[in-house]
Amino acid sequence: MPLARDRIIGHDLERLAFRFTMTNDGDVVHCQISDAAMDELAGMQGTESSARQTQFMSLRETIERLASELYDEAPRFKGYVVRIFTRHLGR
View 1: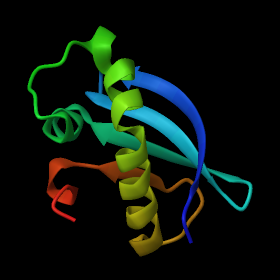
View 2 (view 1 turned 90 degrees about the horizontal axis):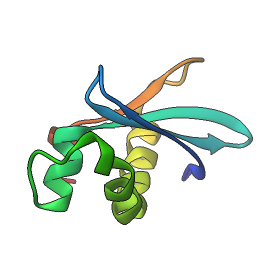
View 3 (view 1 turned 90 degrees about the vertical axis):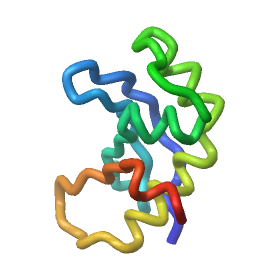
View 4 (view 1 turned 120 degrees about the horizontal axis):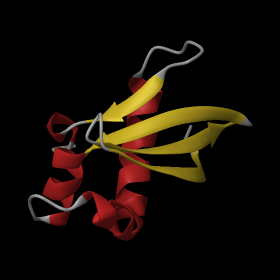
């Protein structure tokens, strides 16, 4: 079952990832995509932290589709975070 779009949290400079949430039947699912994975999707390297939200917005549909696919394959437990890395992009 596909996850539904929720909110943008923003770039996490410490984790080098962009954080966002989606929902599954009203339950919030925390998600993140690594900077490297987002750059690979965009076909670029070294995007500045200040430009990550714009980059996420331009790739949002693809990123959310990947997050939903990974969630469907994941173990279900409270607090699970969907994490997208470059290895997940060849799907």
